[in-house]
Length: 222
Image (cartoon, rainbow, N blue to C red; front, side, top):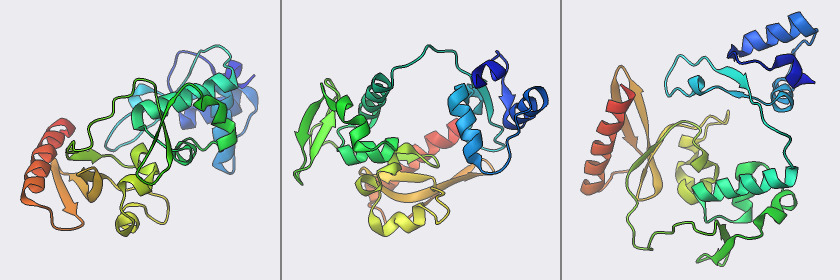
């Protein structure tokens, strides 16, 4: 029903959606954000492509997605496959932490995947043809934006001694960069200039690679 009230081809800002629902249909959205999120889920309302900005001002707009009814089990399986295609191999716990689903909710979705054991003996899952680099592959320097999905699994990439500097008490997550596959510092882009703040001294080769990657990112952000 909610989708019928909202669906059209126009992009709307959040305030516009709320105003339209209240004006035309008598549905007021006040109080906690939970009501707003419930309406988005039930109405299949998602962020439009124009909302994907890396810098301010942020003006998120929304559109209704036209899609057929989806079987919940198939949807969970597809979610697990897409997660593993991006971040696998991963444990059940890592899948659950990223997706917010309990293990029993997605357990059936794990069938048909290949499995491994890591050095700690934990069972890892991955998609059937997922590429795994050799163990001696050197991880390049990479910059991550705020709230990047990769850091939801904090124990794998984010050393515990740096967690407080990256994940704030209000759940805000800083922009970070990776050196040798681990979070090594934060970065800022202000006044057309990108600056990095390493948490500890970096080897000369890592500093050089960091500067080169920072220059490429700054050019793209400008």
